[in-house]
Amino acid sequence: MTAAESTNISLPEVHKKFDWKRLLFMLLGIGLFAFVYYCPPWPDAIDPMGTHFELSKEAKGALAVFLLAATWWVFEVVPIGITSLTIGALQALFMIRDPKVAFKDFMDPSVLFIFGSIVIGMVFTKTGLTKRIAYKMLSIVGEKTSMIMLGCFVMTAALTHLMAHTAVAATMFPMLMAIHALYSEEESTKFGKGLFIGMAYVAGAGSIITLLGAARGAVALGFYKDIMDVDISFFQLTTYMFPIGWLMTFLLWGFAMIAFRPERKTIPGLKDKSKRMYKELGGWSRQEVLTAVIVCVTILVIALKNFIPALGGLHKTGILLCSTIAFFLCNILDLDDLEEIPWNIILLFAGAMSIGFCLWETGAAKWLAVNWLVLFQNSPPLVFILGMAFFVMIMTNFIMNVAAIAISLPVALVIAPYLGVAGEVILFSSLIVAGMPFLLLVGAAPNAIAYSSKQFTTGEFFLYGIPASILLMAVTWLAVTVIWPLMGMEIYVSKVM
Image (tube, rainbow, N blue to C red; front, top):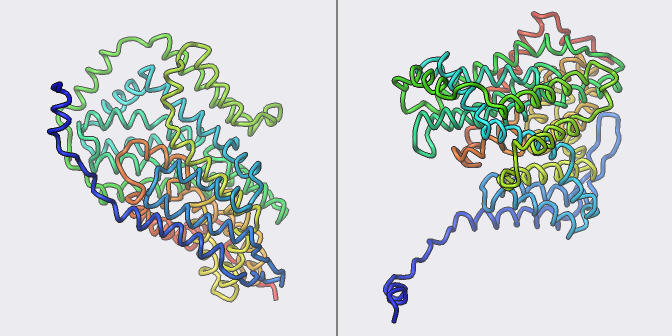
């Protein structure tokens, strides 16, 4: 008998403890799916004009898949990417949508945009640009953890004025990882949770301020023009959203300092250490310069396409993927780097796009919107506005924020005149909450990118998102009742009788 065999015999067999909690939530998701899918037909939704919206078998199936996915995502009974694959599989197996359509959404341009944004973050890390930026910022903000967090949040919010919040999150992520490494050698800390969850939240807060922060703004303004025949300019949007976005940024910093109070108030010697480490990096390398040029050109073209008609036909995903191709052409990235892509996160958003389109195309989302909004058709105007905002806030955690606005705005704009509510306040309050899905990772790409840090679980993100969402609704109320009226926005109009 060999020593190895002897060792194998002598070692006791290790039994992994059975996870009953995981089994419970796994069965809960399946149970919700079965209950909704096999339930008898539900009543039609009826809007204020008397139009009926039927909940078809396919739409009911979409709601069933939606509930299963939400349960599995929140409690992470399987990897979040596998839950996304389940979304596609269930649509195909139960004929909720044509399999070609359901799985085609997994490669939607928005998913590839997230892929390209993550690649930019990887390049920043590989070339050393991340450390260069992190050390420079730390040498400025000092050694207080509160100021370090504030500095990161301000930088995140400011960048979203010029580039998509997904790209900003991907750019900030490696820098935050470098900062956390200087803070602690432990994998997870309270400071780390606050840093990454806060970054995701603030990326959303900053993205509402200009049309460059996310696609939702431009689409919503175009949609509003089609319905109301009223043009809302870039600068008008920015004027009304600027105080709200920055108020949320600073409030979220305060929230993070309370909810994730850092274990240490200061990091002694960090300022001097950061200056020293920055000097040790030496001059800019060829790869750093190339990376900076490629990223800057990419951001510039995406930004200018909103103002230069000749560039208007270029799709932002195509532009961003050109940067990915350029990184490989310039030998900044290679095959090994491609294999390091966090495919779990990519799959997460692929599934989110699929279920979002599923709810939209089957009519399930419209049925939900009408049923919710007609509850407020006889309410006080302020209650109606906040009720509309609340619906968009909840739905944007599960489906595309543009879709959340698109399904609810037409119904809300029909009801609004009868309650004496101006259309603009409906639009702007919807845009506030649509930019800040604080409950689920699938609500926005920055949420999922932050999750890659391994600082928090999906359950923790959901729980901390509840008070953050309450804070968001409070700020929306403040905007409607105080801030926007002071700025000259018309909130209430004469009622249509």
